[in-house]
Image 1 (tube, rainbow, N blue to C red):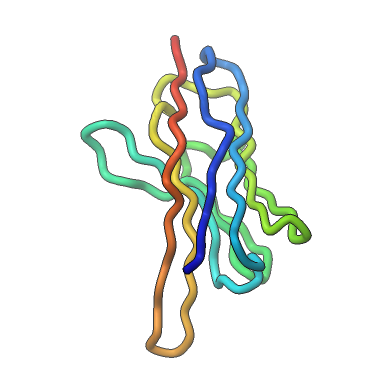
Image 2: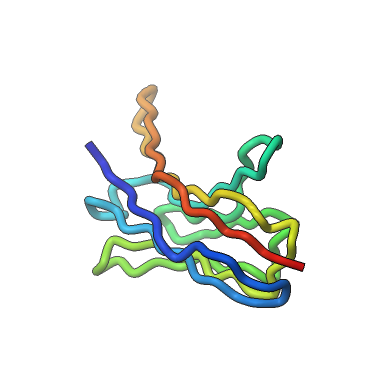
Length: 119
């Protein structure tokens, strides 16, 4: 069973920065995509940033220019650097890893880490 362990959340003032980490229990090259989602109270979970096994990245429009997703292959860890944080970035952030092969698809979630941005 794949495990994803997130860390790095916390309370920060608007304009501040945080870096989230997601440590996977196996090589991140196993997965077709890895990324970060977030869910604010009363809202649906949304994709924030992701990258594919080929290295291409995608960002939600709301975080472009402020957030950066990166990875350390040797540590099997994915990061989300969040700068210029806004109160609307407040949410629980989840790491996600997805694998597909033909008709088979599965994905894994971390336990989530709370990010709170005060105004």
